[in-house]
Image 1 (tube, rainbow, N blue to C red):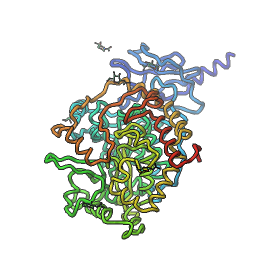
Image 2: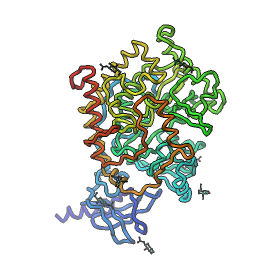
Image 3: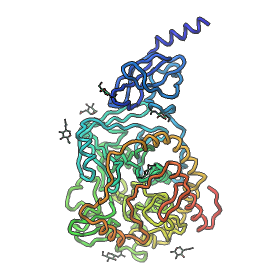
Image 4: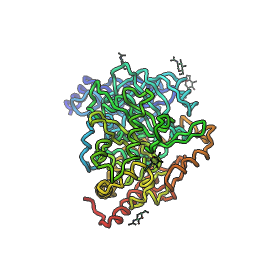
Length: 554
Ligand SMILES: *[C@@H]1O[C@H](CO)[C@@H](O)[C@H](O)[C@H]1NC(C)=O
Ligand SMILES: *[C@@H]1O[C@H](CO)[C@@H](O)[C@H](O)[C@H]1NC(C)=O
Ligand SMILES: *[C@@H]1O[C@H](CO)[C@@H](O)[C@H](O)[C@H]1NC(C)=O
Ligand SMILES: *[C@@H]1O[C@H](CO)[C@@H](O)[C@H](O)[C@H]1NC(C)=O
Ligand SMILES: *[C@@H]1O[C@H](CO)[C@@H](O)[C@H](O)[C@H]1NC(C)=O
Ligand SMILES: *[C@@H]1O[C@H](CO)[C@@H](O)[C@H](O)[C@H]1NC(C)=O
Ligand SMILES: *[C@@H]1O[C@H](CO)[C@@H](O)[C@H](O)[C@H]1NC(C)=O
């Protein structure tokens, strides 16, 4: 007995362990680790990661908030001693007993498009939630928050804290991100890492932290991105958590997605469709790939942006987009063979993207409001365009379109299917339409199917639940904006939007706040929204009955 106790004592005193915990103690307090009832102080690094050496535990350890050496708040559970041979903990989270999770995955339904050569990046590790801490100049952060609609960049530091790695970025240009996402109190942020510095975050230099505040399930974007990955189509993938972690489409994004991160890769033009623009002179333009005539100025009203490409500032930088819209406009089944289309567009990728857009109910995508998409002119594919979907929070029953239309199993009823120039033209080709119908059925059977998606949803919910509770308890940095268009009268914008969109639009900037469980399981149903699982169940049943198929997964 004595020998064993002595051995324990020896091990306990000789082997130093580095303890790491992410914590935000109350003002005036610090953080300590309590090892077998003895308290050892930890030091703050990068604002929120507390670190320090202490003996290894024989029975237990846990973290605490301390005032000098007095423990004021203890974690309400104990942590087991580290496994033999380990000399450092993971970056643990104060008050969370579990650090890694078993998250289910969605099946790979189709091989990725041949054009995708994505770097193998750790950015979207699915079974953990990294912490991103933005810190530094406090008057700069305050300025951002007080001027929520202004485009203003401040320089701050960013710490990315994964489970077993920490990366620090100095002089990061931080701005508020998004358009409609600025109208709600929980803000979204854009991060641009120092251009001159080689450091990247897992190969990326520009990321966006999306607030997910319009989606009380916190899951819709994650499910959509995971689905795009599953059908092998490009999208700016994201991790799970309180903030969506999104790659923004700026150099070197194209290299990371299409060229294995190759240095010196010369990206082609990357055009972004941002839905619409309304100039102060009252000109309204919509980015639905309509042909705007020979005057290239018509493409530069702000309805499109150029996110990559060598000469993106040049006045003729919109020429390739203009030519493509002209091609769409002038082509027809009788005069333009499919081979011509394949030279201009990765048609298979577009068919996949449209099919999943319907099945996932993207209410602010290309077909509905001509928004949230990119066209990439890929130099490795003879400069043909690849369609890329982005930003998917108004989806899966959290929409800005009449729910009946989004839930329809009849693809012709999806808003915009016959309305937008590119879908109208492509689907006048019988082969393309047939392929599209096959994709819709396949994605419904193998992906947007309760027996496949619900286990995935449940496992992600287990992981994010404590974070969601924490997130919902925080004060919001921003305020609610009631007149987002400033002098542009809101009704004018809504009138234009309604005129330029297919029927069924339900414009709303509501922050639909619900508890996590209600958002996911409901049951609730309004004209334009439904709980997450209700959408998946309803869409699956409607598509299968439209195709007259039994409800089985393949
Ligand atoms: C923090 O410390 C200051 C000075 O020691 C004291 O006046 C203040 O009340 C403390 N605040 C809290 C929250 O304990
Ligand atoms: C720790 O978690 C418990 C249970 O989730 C919660 O009641 C408590 O407020 C948390 N404590 C701190 C300091 O976050
Ligand atoms: C902090 O940010 C403000 C606003 O961007 C800026 O004016 C000021 O110079 C910054 N201070 C420091 C020390 O960088
Ligand atoms: C690049 O950034 C890292 C992290 O901010 C910093 O440690 C390093 O000194 C920087 N290098 C250069 C050349 O500026
Ligand atoms: C082609 O473009 C012209 C001019 O923008 C437009 O009036 C016409 O409706 C378009 N035709 C098709 C088939 O899209
Ligand atoms: C699908 O919707 C279209 C457009 O509303 C309609 O014409 C067609 O009859 C519908 N098909 C079925 C099988 O209901
Ligand atoms: C939802 O919003 C209402 C009114 O703004 C607020 O009282 C309530 O606490 C919010 N609920 C959640 C879950 O955030």
